[in-house]
Image (tube, rainbow, N blue to C red):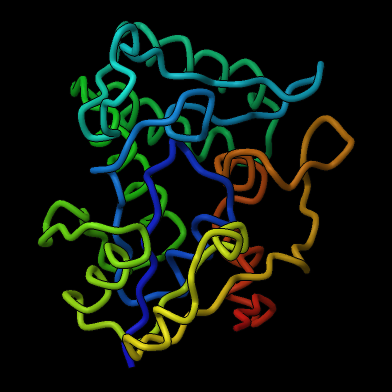
Length: 237
């Protein structure tokens, strides 16, 4: 049995994104599809004393209404300095900020690409390493493209040799499960209930911020707060 997930890349995603990566044998970044504005592709949230704050990578969008995620480029390279400074300012008192300070500086400082996809890939892989996740991560563009929303995903699974497809719960609304059944691929949807709270700064507690929040507050113990590591994540048909 081989399990695959296919998801657009996100910038410093929330912990559920990494639970999905941890639950599969191969994770495919679905970045040769249309870039969506005001979405998770180029932004995420951190906790501050004033509430949540968005960290947004500025990208070129004017006149590029149909550009793909892997065609989207950064419009201002100063984003690295401002994001790192925002993390420093709001997490300096986090228990493990000092532990990750140099790692963050190298991660941001060494990010020289203008490509949003490659920036996201860099951060996702670096965070996976910190969370002891060893899932193979590939690009959808590594595979042959076929037409059709469900057919494209099914073809990617088939080319990857998968017979189980794991998805986030929101995808249930647009997937034609009968087509998947005909293709012989079992589809399961994640249920993200059951996350334990950790030592988060600035109450009230918020599960839906970047996973960096978990790392900076719990350090090496962050892996114990992933549902896939404590047998609480459920995937249902």
